[in-house]
Image 1: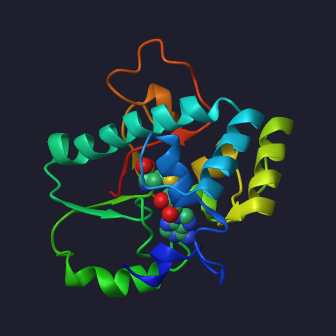
Image 2 (image 1 turned 60 degrees about the vertical axis):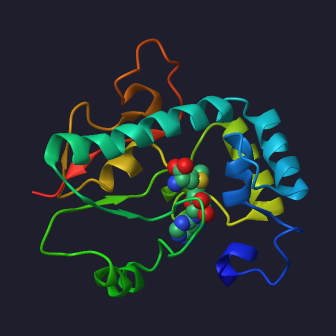
Length: 195
Ligand SMILES: C[S@@+](CC[C@H](N)C(=O)[O-])C[C@H]1O[C@@H](n2cnc3c(N)ncnc32)[C@H](O)[C@@H]1O
């Protein structure tokens, strides 16, 4: 287990004394790999924005779509997951990711790059309703790494130069086969192809 697994990024405090997103997320989706400090922070966030529980469900469903679309419909066999449950790479440092990736990936073949539930940790904007700002403030004062939030326009800018696959950027709860009457959640998901 590497250093980044045991301590929140940029922190010298032990993982058990500060809530870290990866562990809080594990708690959110019913996992066992959690600490008390993370469970408390996660429950507090859920008390400020209860919709976070629906977001977690929708995120998992969308993750399935994000894998089956390139794998099943387009025959992609290689996946670069930036931001899995344990951080192996910093999404802010694409150069480092690209330097290490050729060790396991063949760049002459198609690669699906995934950032599920992770872009919120790439800081550059601050938008959202009052409750979401409160939840964000609580998180940023009590847990790690800090988060930001993006509105639709900020998300769509990330898609410049890419061709979104149907249905395009939508609430995560609406972007998969079982969407049906699932409640719309304030988290976007999109699968896009580099032309
Ligand atoms: C909401 S969880 C989602 C986990 C998983 N990708 C999923 O969809 O189930 C967010 C993940 O982003 C990771 N993360 C946070 N900051 C990151 C960064 N700067 N670079 C890469 N991953 C990061 C966290 O460790 C955490 O696992």
